[in-house]
View 1: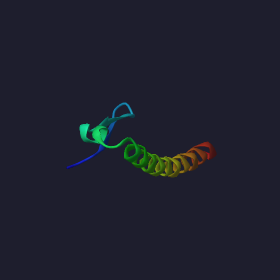
View 2: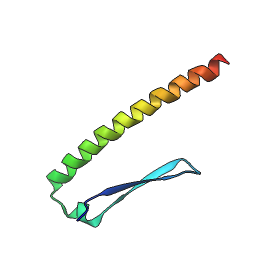
View 3: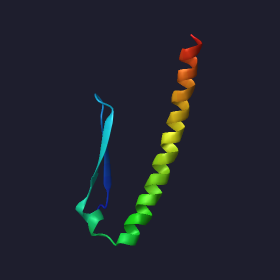
Length: 64
């Protein structure tokens, strides 16, 4: 049985959204917030990595 939140992105618009499975909604609220906090931390780390790459790319563009 999968308990999941699906992340989806529209390649054309650059917009994203999430879909929460019914099973996730049925889990204990403490479990839900624990898992969500783990995911938020991981997503924040990924965001910060990519933000750093983008800032470096922007610096290169400004040099030109």
